[in-house]
Image (tube, rainbow, N blue to C red; front, side, top):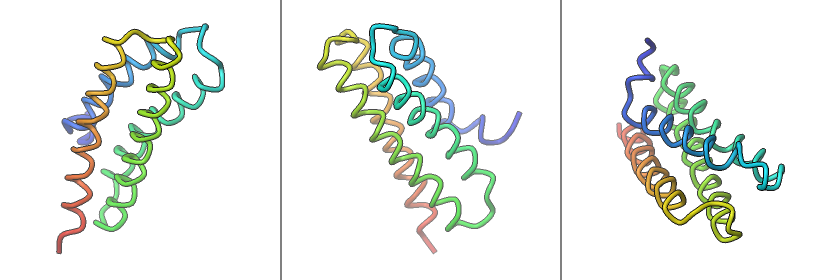
Length: 117
C-alpha cells in the first residue's frame, strides 16, 4: 500500500468519489457533459493528492494540493447544479457536499503546512 492511500484526506476522497460514481456518473438522465465534467474534477482530486504526496519539495506538494482543492470547488458546483436540476436527491447532495467540504478543509490544512518554513 502506498503512503498516500493511508492519508485521511485521500480515504475520504475515495469515499466521496464512490458516491459520485454511484449517484451521478451512472445516472444516464444526467447530461453527458455534466457527467464528464464531474468525472474529471472528482478524479482530479484523487490524482493530485497522490501526485502531491509523491513530491519531495514542499512547494511542489503545495501546488498539487492546491489543484486538488480547486477540483473540489469545481465538483461542488457541478453536484449543486445536478441537485438544483433535480437529478440527485437532497440527502445524496448533502452527503456529497459535506464530504467535499471536509476534503477542502483538509486540503487547506495541507496547503498551509506546506507553506510554513
